[in-house]
Image (cartoon, rainbow, N blue to C red; front, side, top):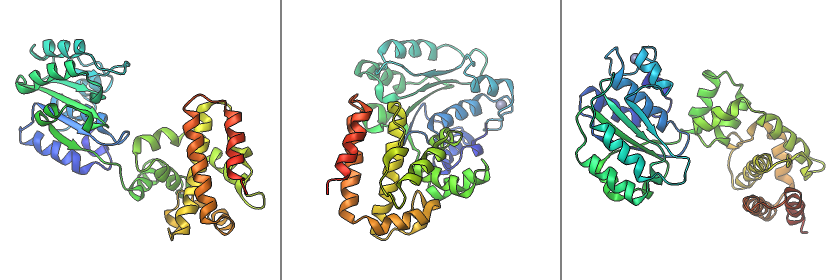
Length: 319
Ligand SMILES: [Zn+2]
């Protein structure tokens, strides 16, 4: 995949591409920023660009080298990530051994350390030694959405590249133009995903819009507060339902303070929004948003979902 196919990260990729074109790559990079915005994908594309047989300072995406990297089968490109909560020193010792060997078939040896904030102190110290004197034609890319958790010494040895969530309007446009979503769904997904393309793409083929509509249909006048549309069969669906419910009341709350309709996450349901807006007071909305927040927090603690739903209703209807 060429760099231009990674959307909304022009500033981060600009730095990388200039370094690449001038042959001035640092030995270590730290790709940091929110989750699901393309950090790991960019690390993969950079490894493709370094090893691409077409020598174009970019990834052609189709040569054998690019294809192998895409499939995770290139012998010189390693993705280090751990299912354990911690990345242990053994992994970094292995990296240290491998990085000093010659590339098998590529031009560059690349080590992508995913979730780099999980490196143990011992692993960090071991990595620091490698970052102090990285061998020629090798590159270490640390990827994390929690940059400040890394050792300062590690950060100072890396070139830091910051990735950001996209503007919601830009993401909406990408979803419409490149993924053929209709305006209402593209708007909802872009805002619901908070501008994170990866999250939006994961949700685009799900039934989230159906679930959302089902919830809003029941929330609308005259009942205004029938929670029967919430899916509570399992914790994951309940959590999603709560998230959707939260967007609805958050929209109403912000509209009370002047947020225009087009900025609402659920702006495609403007007629229901306007009915509900007339019905709820600011203090109602504050109480409801608190109740939703508390329910989500209890959900994390393995409490029975029916009981939580029952309590949510009780917290909402206190008057
Ligand atoms: Zn290629």
